[in-house]
Image 1 (cartoon, rainbow, N blue to C red):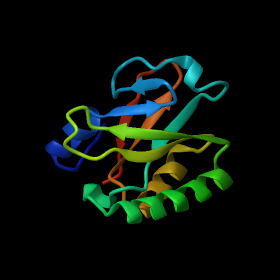
Image 2 (tube, rainbow, N blue to C red):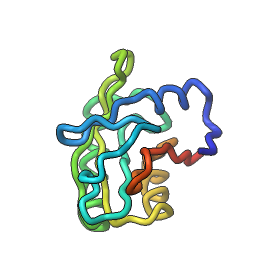
Image 3 (spheres, helix red, strand yellow):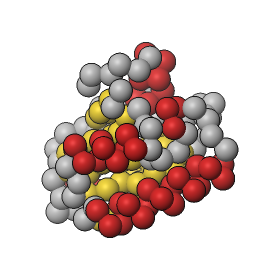
Image 4 (tube, one colour):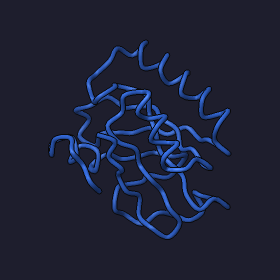
Length: 133
């Protein structure tokens, strides 16, 4: 992972619980293959809190709705996710697990929403953080 944002942000992202259905994913921990189904990879992406700055709940909801529309039209499949700070110092962030997007395409979408990073899921590999800045 090449991460140019602050170490504090890197620690926050890697310490986050990523909830997908009944599963909790963590950066660097084994990934259940059943999550990907027939796909070889997927991306977790959010539109909330651009540049890791807290935004009003209504603004995050509008951004999330726009991201959902984009992903429904461009991804092979999506599932809702929730990024949760285990210490609860940061509010939960809604997001999406998207299958069928290339890493470059997913990164471009995330950059449009001014995100610092996305989570990359690959079969038989632990989730990893992919920095965008």
